[in-house]
Image (tube, rainbow, N blue to C red; front, side, top):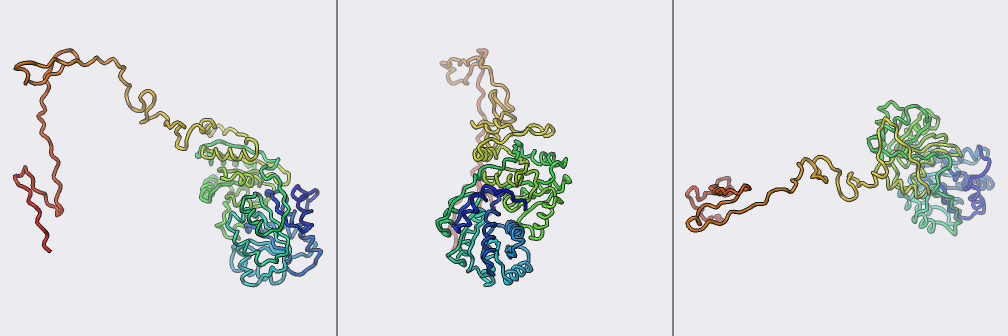
Length: 470
């Protein structure tokens, strides 16, 4: 199977597992962690030759459960150890196939929590003799809300067992779970914050309108034979898929909304290089194990820097090389800075192709807020906006040389009651025009029944309101 020397996680974990101790191992995907627990567990099952369910492995997704089961089949090919993958999705036929496999007896069960509980409550599956419990990608299971399901499943297990917990991250809830279900576990931490050495990381700073054209340019020449595009939302996955399909690219979306058979077909075609491009969310970054992926494109930066590691970790697996490109707009700058802080170095920026024009500059974008205003609250000068010279469509301000006003002396004697006069700029006196405009009174409001109330101009007086007859 190509194993020559153990990976760091295998070299540290296998000896601990062989002693029977509980273990918490923090290691990212693609480090050989699956084999690090399968090899010692399969060895112990082979030595005992017991015809009951000896080992339970819990996984967050059906794709991961299937991948683990496939590795079991490969590693245990000459041992006669039996296994079954239990997961949701599909139709009643899949459930019935799983039930029959359990009834025939299996040494090792790989399952997602929800479907496993269904088989446990039906009484078909017995776990009272399990000696090894493995939680693979435990952090992902907790993110998906499986904490209570895990605790419920453990009630079906014997207290005397070995528990192995593997996780890419170690949030507080993992510690809480470990304190609940484990006994004095050994701990191993394999640097989770560093991408594989063979990954060529690049950043393109783009406006949103430049993202799709850039992806088309990157993929049009067929340089990359196997590409994954990640986006943070399902809606954006659909949008990107439609745009690339319109550009005649051979691409498929990958979503949990698809039927199980559809998902399996997409992954099979992608693994066999019949399908060159797939698009998915962060769930795909942990639910796919395919070698030979040339390119990973992050349509947007993930909210969690750890997800960046999982995304780009799909390429350059098993000491190969690959490229990871991240598209960054002004809204994602802070996410990029968190990613760079976590990996301990800046991600190199690649200039945009000339045909796309210029993208946003780092300095320009950091000096503006989300509406394009600068940090001091000033909007860019333009039509309708004030600027330093008066701004907008307004004309220039006066130069300040207007002559001062002078007033004529007040008339005396008989002229005291005459018309008021005002001096003009030339010093001549002009009579002030009398104001003969009549004052306009506001129109009376209409009464409630639609008629007009009488007013003084019509010669009528408003009558007092009479009481309403009861």
